[in-house]
Length: 213
Image 1 (cartoon, rainbow, N blue to C red):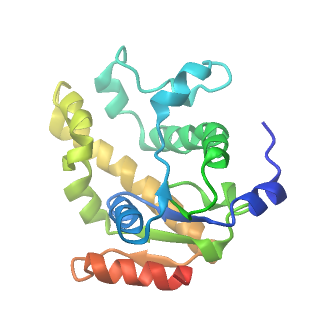
Image 2: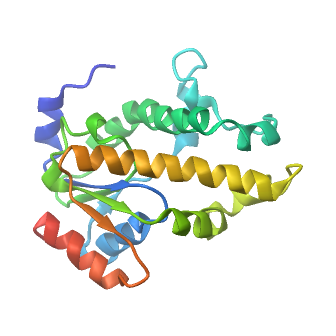
Image 3: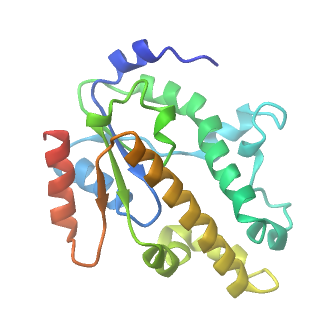
């Protein structure tokens, strides 16, 4: 599917994008925009899109699935796993853009999705994008122990060595986060680091200020 960037740029003038890596506050910021400013949002529902895909045209969207060897899945080489993380988002975008186009235009939309910025800069300008990131240590401390990742941790606990699976999985998420951050910096996109000293309210203020809201 070829996407006309000029057309999407016109249609998405009311869309703001929270890019970046894991555990950086994207979900928290999205909730703030929705609850306090009345924004709309759109979740990245892979299971919604999968029935309309095939292994040939959308190989990344076929995974993960219940029939996997979970030991191999969580302990695959970091480069291989990160390649899948980027590919699944790219495959999903074809469906995601259609869902965005169906949303009401009378209220702004906030999107929380880590993706290589080159994939969306043709229709989401950097002024309406911000990259949120946190330290490698915070990702390692939080990622697999978040409430919304409980199902992932439940599966990891079925592997032969859960501690090693988590260790390797953390390396995957750190590499994924670093790659997006570096790409955003290279494209001149504003980056904001979530630290222990940065409150949710202050992070929200900085993001709003960048967006001119």
